[in-house]
Image 1 (cartoon, rainbow, N blue to C red):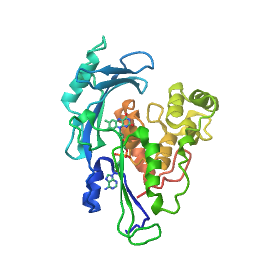
Image 2 (tube, helix red, strand yellow):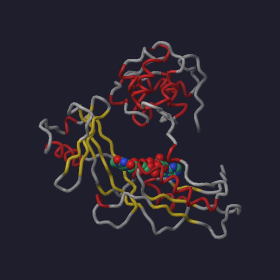
Image 3 (cartoon, protein in one colour):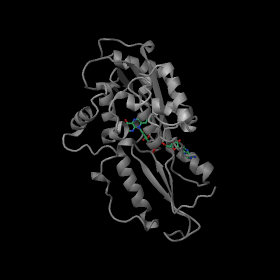
Image 4 (cartoon, rainbow, N blue to C red):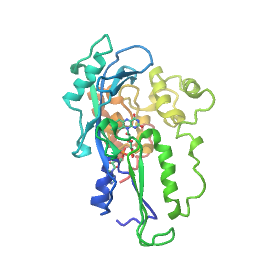
Amino acid sequence: RTVRARALVNAAGPWVDRVLRDRLGVATTKHVRMVKGSHIVVPRQFDGEQAYILQNPDRRIVFVIPYEQDFTLIGTTDVPWTSDPGQVEISPEEIRYLCDSVNRYFHKPIAPSDVVWSYAGVRPLYDDAAQNASAVTRDYVLDVDVPDGVSGATPGGAPLLSIFGGKITTYRRLAEHALEKLAPYLPVVTGAGWTADQPLPGGDLGPGGFDAVLERLRADAPFLPERTAWRLARNYGTRAWAIIGDARKMADLGEEFGAGLTAREVDYLLREEWAETADDILWRRSRLGLHVGRDDAARLERYVNARRTGAPGPSGQAPIAMAS
Ligand SMILES: Cc1cc2nc3c(=O)[nH]c(=O)nc-3n(C[C@H](O)[C@H](O)[C@H](O)COP(=O)(O)OP(=O)(O)OC[C@H]3O[C@@H](n4cnc5c(N)ncnc54)[C@H](O)[C@@H]3O)c2cc1C
């Protein structure tokens, strides 16, 4: 299939170099440096909502954060990575390093055998030639490659914007900055950035913020267990109402898969948040995988497959149309 576009944005994260080189055949002097970071999750280590920042002898810091109500999250590491970013996983040395960090400060020691889950990712950092992986800049760099003679109205070539580096925390500024870079080639982009005051979907919490939203959700859906109400308010903000809809009792939310996850929430994630598999739901759109048992996860997988292949939803809703 041929897709025509006025501009192309290469936001492939750790793969940005490869997309440029292998897919688009564009030479660039800018590159990302891949630095693996890993986290471990252990049963809750302390009471309270506070997080800790531990100073390590190697001058790095490690965070210890309350996680998913029953757990503690510990991370992260900085390990140079040169292999396929899709194949990354935590090493035994990283697990040991994170346990040692905690044991230097906490009375209650932890061991690798306490780790209930871990995850690792590759940071696509802009290569500023720093010697040490921890010292590489966390700023982003935007690069526009403009074929000869391209203007907003010129067919036959499109500007290509590549994003090197970046952080989730700078996503909004980065997105505005990207459009500023592309504006000369896209007549439709006019005016100054407007995102500073715009809430993200579900983030229009109103006066009273999160506490008021939770209070309203409890009042509108008194049948929800407290943990589920809190989780829905925290994960979805005002979009929680798109999940509970007209439900008047727990059974109206359809089949339960453990930890308060119901068919209505699953349908919402398939429909609105591009989830395609049970793993997407349990690990990528949420961390419910930490709480849901194996049998429930298998039941969820069967439900997701059935919904994707035409079975009706909890209240007879139509099958979920999936993007191909
Ligand atoms: C361990 C770790 C800890 C981090 N901690 C923080 C933090 O505390 N705060 C913070 O702000 N940021 C943090 N980050 C950074 C943050 O995760 C990234 O900056 C962010 O995910 C970048 O988003 P992105 O959309 O640019 O890239 P990505 O999330 O990497 O997405 C790139 C996408 O491109 C897709 N892709 C690749 N090739 C192709 C292709 N050929 N065609 C189509 N699609 C393709 C990939 O599948 C992927 O989905 C951390 C990262 C790691 C690894």
